[in-house]
Amino acid sequence: MSAQVARSPIPPVTEEEIDEVLAEFGGDAREAIRALLHDQAALVADAEQAVSRGFLRGLFSEGARRLAAEDEA
Image (cartoon, rainbow, N blue to C red; front, side, top):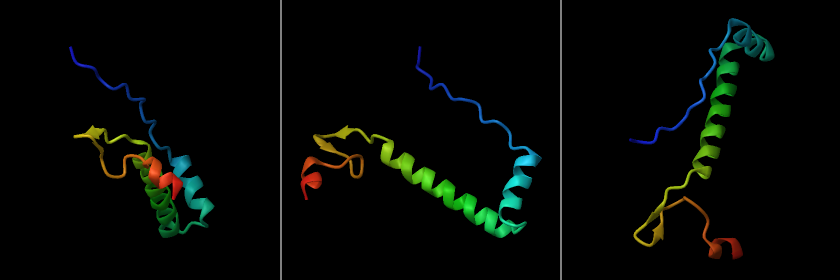
């Protein structure tokens, strides 16, 4: 028996939501896409900071968390 991660379903994007995003940027599709990609990159970067990379051979993997010495500097 293996454990499975429960994932919440991602709701489909509606035409109305697409129209709202385009309207927010004055109908400029390139600016809307740029803003959405920027937001996506920020969310991914934030998630990367929250994910533990684990404890490997007595060392925390790079970037997984700040060490106490880094907090004092």
